[in-house]
Length: 297
Ligand code: R5P
Image (cartoon, helix red, strand yellow):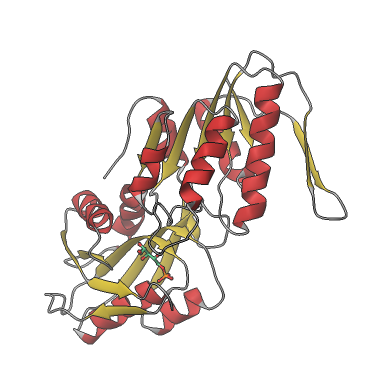
């Protein structure tokens, strides 16, 4: 077995390669002057079992095209089996036509990945589990909430409560999973997003958080408004330190600033997205999954 590190996840691929003691395939990549991507295997991969690692964080379209070209080349050159690890599976919001005439982005991504010949897909905290039903190949939705909780367990938390910033089933399951690791209580807030304007409203709710440390666990930080609203509600109710952990910190414009300004102590993400907030690695989660230990919530 060999590992192919895509351009968006090369450091993560190195970590996984060293944890599994499996070599990285030598590849060459570049961008042409007009922006098109070029990919070349620098060694023979025919007959190999490959793990391709490439996260689809912004710029999603560029990272997706890189993944598709690598996958196509691997299959075309005769790889035996191909497993994909795509920690952030972009385009996972649109699993159905919520408004008439909309595109089914998640279905298109699934169709391309399967047509190009992937044999299995591993991802982390997919935004909407329904998108996984669109795949015929085996798909594993792993969670980083346990690893995030382990990170916060080193913060000397006082009587902690884990909070999901919205009441979606997956959000509550992630918070419950993190709470189990921290041996803490958990609860959730309720949030609504306007489908046209994207405006977010989080409803206040009486929570027993006065004088306690809080860990907010979410899948994505995009605009940062969901986390910021939750931090503010918790601080207004007398919470002490409020930490925010998310599997995928997409780092859009002011997102971190508005969360910190709302009173958060620290914002922590994973190396699903390469940025300075990636203080937790998803490598051990994937390594365990390959050995059959699937960490789900
Ligand atoms: C909500 O549905 C998700 O779990 C996240 O809470 C959401 O994507 C975060 O988005 P934003 O940072 O834009 O509020």
